[in-house]
Structures are given as C-alpha cells and as structure tokens.
Image 1 (cartoon, rainbow, N blue to C red):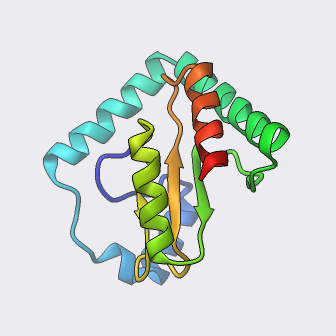
Image 2: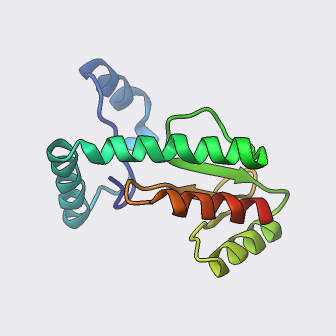
Amino acid sequence: MGSLGGYVAGSSALIDFLRNRASTWIYTTGLTPADTAAALEAVKIIRQEPERRDRLQKNIETFKHCAINNYELPITNSPSPIFCFPLKDAATALVASSKLKDMGIFAPAIRPPTVSVSRIRISLMATHEPAHLQHLVDALAQI
C-alpha cells in the first residue's frame, strides 16, 4: 500500500498512546492529497481482491523456501514481503544493487545514515511469478 511515508492503523488505545508518546512521528509533514488518495484506493483494492494477499503470502513462502533450501541465504522468519540483506559497507551494497539491476532486479542499496548497517532491500509483490522468484534467489546467490 506504499505511496509515501507511512501511517498506523490500530485500536483507539494504540492511537492514543502514539499521539501522547510519539510526538516526533506525529508532528512531521503530513501526506499529500495524492498520496492519501493512493492509500485509500489501495485499501479499497485489498478489500475487493483478497486473492492478491493470498498470492503475496504464497510468494513470500516460495521465496523463503527457495532461498533457504537452495542456497542457505539468511532469511528472517517474518511475514513481511520486504527482505533486507545486510552487507559489510555502503560500497558493497552499491555494487550488489548495481549487479542485481544488471540482472533485471530492482534492489536498492540502503546505507547509513538511513540505517546503521548497509544492506540491499528486496520487496516481493503479488504479481511475481515463481520463475521471477527463482531468478531472484539465483541472482542473490551469485552476488
């Protein structure tokens, strides 16, 4: 559902807690009308097409299975479709990102000061096919 920034959906107790304890997050620049409209449309699509979530969950499990069983890649046990692979430094992350791009894979390098440890980040989608996931695993194993 990403467009820009983030938001929290939760119980009234959680929202009240965040309003009172997370002022550095609350008092930042708000979402633009376009980003808000994009998020609202994403929620609408999720409600109307739950099969997309099912496909995404299947892709997460397929990727984890292939990455662990074929190459023993370090995969966290998380339900998230976002996977980060820590690397030794920013230069290594940039090279890895560039090599993956040359193989047709968008995996941005995330570096300090954004994060404390440089990494590449992979985001799976419901529209990925099994062949895409296998290609990704093979490419990660190469770098």
